[in-house]
Image (cartoon, rainbow, N blue to C red):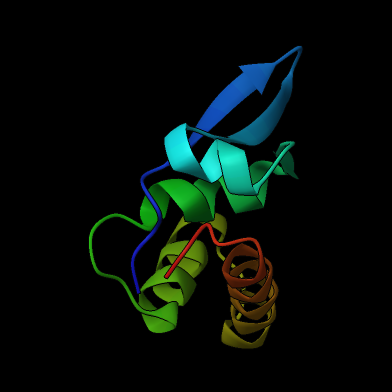
Length: 87
Protein backbone atom coordinates (compact mmCIF):
# COMPACT_ATOMS: atom_id res chain seq x y z
CA UNK A 1 0.00 0.00 0.00
CA UNK A 2 0.95 3.63 -0.20
CA UNK A 3 -0.68 6.81 0.90
CA UNK A 4 -2.22 9.23 -1.56
CA UNK A 5 0.14 12.21 -1.58
CA UNK A 6 -2.80 14.49 -2.45
CA UNK A 7 -3.67 14.51 1.25
CA UNK A 8 -1.72 16.36 3.96
CA UNK A 9 -2.03 16.60 7.73
CA UNK A 10 -2.70 20.04 9.16
CA UNK A 11 -3.06 21.10 12.77
CA UNK A 12 -6.08 23.29 13.44
CA UNK A 13 -6.64 24.60 16.96
CA UNK A 14 -5.08 21.57 18.62
CA UNK A 15 -6.72 18.99 16.36
CA UNK A 16 -5.25 17.17 13.39
CA UNK A 17 -7.07 16.93 10.07
CA UNK A 18 -6.28 15.28 6.78
CA UNK A 19 -6.91 17.80 4.01
CA UNK A 20 -7.27 16.93 0.32
CA UNK A 21 -5.24 18.86 -2.26
CA UNK A 22 -5.48 19.18 -6.04
CA UNK A 23 -7.74 16.66 -7.74
CA UNK A 24 -8.46 14.97 -4.41
CA UNK A 25 -10.18 18.18 -3.29
CA UNK A 26 -12.54 17.93 -6.27
CA UNK A 27 -13.59 14.40 -5.37
CA UNK A 28 -13.64 14.88 -1.59
CA UNK A 29 -15.10 18.08 -0.20
CA UNK A 30 -14.14 18.24 3.46
CA UNK A 31 -11.51 17.05 5.90
CA UNK A 32 -10.90 13.92 7.96
CA UNK A 33 -10.22 14.41 11.65
CA UNK A 34 -7.36 12.33 13.01
CA UNK A 35 -6.72 11.37 16.60
CA UNK A 36 -3.10 11.11 17.82
CA UNK A 37 -2.87 7.42 16.87
CA UNK A 38 -4.26 7.96 13.36
CA UNK A 39 -1.88 10.89 12.85
CA UNK A 40 1.01 8.69 13.94
CA UNK A 41 -0.03 5.93 11.52
CA UNK A 42 -0.41 8.42 8.64
CA UNK A 43 3.10 9.71 9.27
CA UNK A 44 4.45 6.14 9.61
CA UNK A 45 2.88 5.18 6.26
CA UNK A 46 5.72 6.47 4.08
CA UNK A 47 6.52 4.92 0.73
CA UNK A 48 5.26 1.38 0.25
CA UNK A 49 4.02 -0.04 3.53
CA UNK A 50 2.06 -2.99 4.86
CA UNK A 51 -0.40 -3.34 7.68
CA UNK A 52 2.29 -5.27 9.53
CA UNK A 53 4.63 -2.25 9.21
CA UNK A 54 2.02 -0.04 10.87
CA UNK A 55 1.34 -2.61 13.57
CA UNK A 56 5.05 -2.85 14.41
CA UNK A 57 5.31 0.94 14.52
CA UNK A 58 2.35 1.17 16.93
CA UNK A 59 3.74 -1.53 19.19
CA UNK A 60 7.12 0.22 19.31
CA UNK A 61 5.67 3.73 19.83
CA UNK A 62 2.93 2.95 22.34
CA UNK A 63 4.01 -0.37 23.89
CA UNK A 64 0.67 -2.00 23.11
CA UNK A 65 -0.03 -5.66 22.41
CA UNK A 66 -0.24 -7.09 18.88
CA UNK A 67 -4.02 -7.60 19.01
CA UNK A 68 -4.69 -3.97 19.94
CA UNK A 69 -2.28 -2.77 17.26
CA UNK A 70 -3.93 -4.98 14.62
CA UNK A 71 -7.39 -3.67 15.54
CA UNK A 72 -6.23 -0.04 15.31
CA UNK A 73 -4.49 -0.62 11.97
CA UNK A 74 -7.47 -2.50 10.51
CA UNK A 75 -9.77 0.39 11.38
CA UNK A 76 -7.34 3.01 10.07
CA UNK A 77 -6.66 1.20 6.78
CA UNK A 78 -10.36 0.53 6.14
CA UNK A 79 -11.28 4.19 6.65
CA UNK A 80 -8.35 5.53 4.66
CA UNK A 81 -9.08 3.19 1.74
CA UNK A 82 -12.78 4.12 1.76
CA UNK A 83 -11.85 7.82 1.58
CA UNK A 84 -9.17 7.29 -1.08
CA UNK A 85 -6.36 8.42 1.19
CA UNK A 86 -4.37 5.22 0.74
CA UNK A 87 -4.13 2.95 -2.27
